[in-house]
Picture 1 (cartoon, rainbow, N blue to C red):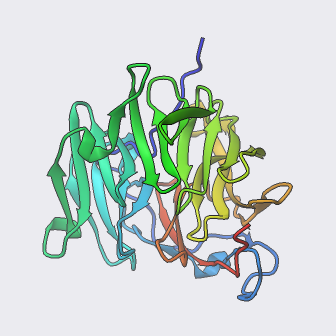
Picture 2 (picture 1 turned 45 degrees about the vertical axis):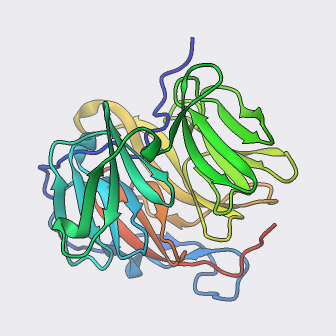
Length: 318
C-alpha cells in the first residue's frame, strides 16, 4: 500500500484569517562564513538582515515567485486562499479568497490546479495584487496523458527531452527520442527540475521523515542527499536549497512539524549543509528568486513569510 504523500502539492492555496506578529527580527545565527561573496557555496545572510513580508498577517505558506521576481504568490492558513506579496514587503493582497489547489511551474509561469479548474497565474501591472488569473485547459497547465493512461505533469520540455511527474503513481519520467524511462518508480513528491533540465530533485516518504533525491541527466546517476523536503534550485542548476523538518508536538497538543531548518546541497558533495540555525522559526518551503539573490520561506509556526538575502557564490556547474 502506497503511503499518503503531500505529492505534487508544492502549494495548497487558501485565505488566512490569522493575524501574524509584528516585524520583529528572528533570533539565531546564519551559517559560518556569511558575506563571503566570492565563496563557492551559497550563504544565507544573518537573521538580522531578513525581512518579514507580512508583519501584520495573514498566515502564509507555500511561497512561489512570479517571473521577474517583483512579486510572489503564497497560500493562506491550511492552504485556503491565494495571496500576492510584494517582494519588498510593501503589500499583501488577497487575489483569490477561498481557492485551494496545487500550484506548479508551467511554461516558465505558474499554474493552479483546483479540482477540475486550470488557472494560470501571471504578473500583471494594474491588476489586483499585480497578478492576473486566467482560466485555461489541461494542456495549458502542462498536463498530458501517460502511456499507462494516467495524468502526467510536464515539468520541463527542451532539447534534453521532457521531464514528467505522474500524478497518479508518483513516477518521475524522462521522455526523449520517442522513448520513456522511469527516473524514479513511484511515490515521488515535491518534484523540482533545475533550470535547463539538467537535474531533477524529488522527495520520498512522509513529510515528517522525508528523503531527498537528486538525479543527474547527463551521467544517469541518482544521489540520496539524506533527510529533506521542498527542494528549490538555484539558477546555476547545480545547487538546491531545501528544508529538513522534524516531527513533534505543535499547537493544541497534536503531532506535526515542530521544527525545521534550511539546508543547501551542491551536486557532487557528500551531503548538504545547514544554511541557518533559528530555533524560533520553523523554516519551510524555500523559494529561490529568479536572479538567485533572495530566498523566501514560510514559518509554519507563526505564518510569517520571510525574505532573506542569498549570497549565491560562484556556483559549481558540476
